[in-house]
Each structure stands twice: as structure tokens, then as C-alpha cells.
Length: 276
DNA sequence: AATGTATTCAACCGCTCCCCG
DNA sequence: GCGGGGAGCGGTTGAATACAT
Image 1 (cartoon, helix red, strand yellow):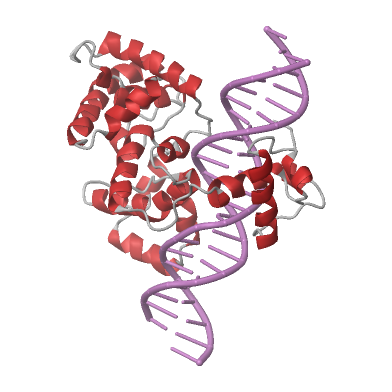
Image 2: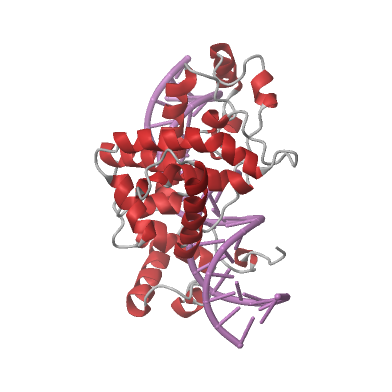
């Protein structure tokens, strides 16, 4: 993109925030409100870039942030939403009052992805894993790597690791209008190819649409294992329409199952809120 | 007790989207 | 319609801490 990151400006502090900086930021925002992050540091007397200020406020200083452990309910909801939305942490965080996208992302990477990996390890190899979990792998000791190899967790003699490559989506901002576009596309897709779905049933587009839409442009699957072999988006010879045809029925079924299991009604209300 | 390893989480980075002129 | 700037997002990093040997 060419534009240099604002943090590269000389003279700006980086790293952990001090109490004094926190106080300055809080005081300023309490007095003037959020926004205008670019100019905020200067006005607030902070030697930080706007991005850094925004992040600090959003992830740590905001008064409505809930500290403490993720409850089992939240844990469950995160898993469900992730199966629906993939790594759209901000959307997921939007359904968990007081939780930040960063917190949920960290929680997922450190707890849930590992747990889910283990739970599916018996069924199939999951070594294609998410890039977000890459670091723990990279940083893992030789000892641990050897252990995993011995357990066959991530490399069936090193074959699987090289055979299948999953391309994860780039970071894209999801705003209301994007979601609306998403939904329109999805509804038209479902309408034409999933005639087994009940007409007018608003739940019919959710899971399928999200997954198809995400795979339409870039190979992606939140449950990557489930889409093994369909990761052909980067192959020009594999037209998107074909992928849709292949996946829609399976995806729709998966979504219906998810809805059945959704005894709290979170998914329905979530879907409704997106449509609103 | 010392050392090595694994985990957690705040913060940074690069990219993309949206808005406005 | 186009381009630039601000804002937001997800991925990644690194330091601190916890845990294991």
C-alpha cells in the first residue's frame, strides 16, 4: 500500500504503557470522547501513535471491559460463533459484552484452537492448522516437536504438512454494510442452489453463506479440516461456482445442525442483529 | 535452586475498507 | 470515478510469567 505506518515516526514511544500514559489517555477521552485517533496523541500530550492509543483504549482502558476468566458460557459461544464466522474476532467480540477482539483472539489461540485440535485429532490430522497458532509451533522446542511427531499429531511422516496448504483470509474489516452485502449475496446463492431449505426461513442462509462467501474469494474454512480437498480457490482452474455447488449442501446441513444445537438462541439473535 | 520450556497476553504491523474532497 | 487519509481488522511478535525437569 505504500503508506508508512504511523508508529514508525521518530520520537514516539513504543512498548508497554505506563500508568501516566494511561491516565493521560483516559482523561482525554473522558473529556473529549473517542475518535480522531490520529490527532489524539498530540492533543492528549502523549508520545504515542494514534493506532497505539486506540488499541490501548479499546483493549484495556475502556470502562466497560470485563476482566477475568472467560466463563464456560462465553467459551461455548466463542466456539459456536467461530464455527460460523471464522477468525472474525471483532464480530465475535461484538456478541460478548465486555470482551475485546484481542482477548478473544488470544483466548482462541491459546486455549480453544488447541482444545479443538485435540478433540479432532482422533478423526484426522489437523496439522494444517491456523496461521494464528503458528507461533507456538515455531517457538516449540525440539523436544515438543519430537513428541508431536511421535504422537502423529501434526506430521504423518511429514507428508501432510506439505501436501495441503490452507490459505487464510487476509484481515478485512467487517462493517455493517459489508455484512449486508454478504447477506444479499448469500441469500441469492442459497435461494438458487439449496431448494431443500424452507422458503422464508431466515436461518437458511447463515452458515452456508458465510462459508461460501469466504471461500468465494479466498480459500478459507474455519473448520479447515472439513473442507479438505475444496481448497482450490487459488487454482484458476477451479471456478468459484463449482465450489459453491460442491459445498452448499454440506455447509447448509452443517449449519442446520449447529442451529439445532443452539439451545440458547444466540445464533438466531445474532443473525437478526446483522440483518437489522 | 537452577535451567529450560511452554503459555499468556499486551502491543505492534501490515493490510483493507470506508469516507470525503 | 479517483486518490488520500483515517480507522479498523486479523496476524504476529516478544516479554513476562508459569510450569517442568
